Image (tube, rainbow, N blue to C red; front, side, top):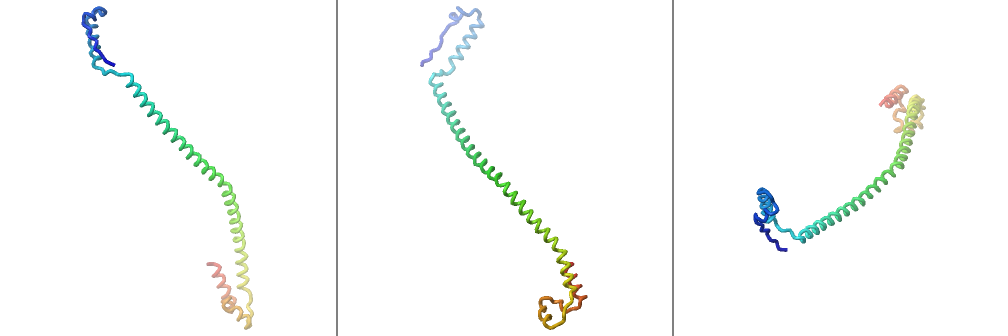
Amino acid sequence: MAFTKLNLTRDQLSTFLTDQQQIKQFELLFQAVDTLQVIVGTDFEYQADTAFALANSALAEIASLAQSMEVEDAVLSAKIQQALDAIPPLAQSTAINDAVLNAKVQLSLDAIPRLAQSLELLALAPIRNNIELEHDVVGILPYANQTQRVRSNTVLTWLSM
């Protein structure tokens, strides 16, 4: 499309403009228009096509990222649900183990006084001085051949450790 300058003279402008100031303004306007680059309709179409292609590319990338995020979200949700589902059995197992442990500790604590009493009675028990018994307890009861007072003190010392 060819562009031609408007070559209007002052006389031509004075036919529809009444004042000299208006004529000067129109001349300045024509000079500005003459210096502007001519824009052809295909330039707009090309720029619009380029912008449309870039927008479509961006939309495709956004859709791909959204789909990827949905997959990752689904995987994370499944893992979270799996962890949440594992909590009640673990809590129940822990409660059972805790109860069993508490029962065993209580049984052990209850047995300590009985064991101490049995040891005291054993230390105070009379030892028969016959050869057969001495032969049976040598190495098993090292204090069996000592006096009752020594045996009691040794057992009490051992219990206080």
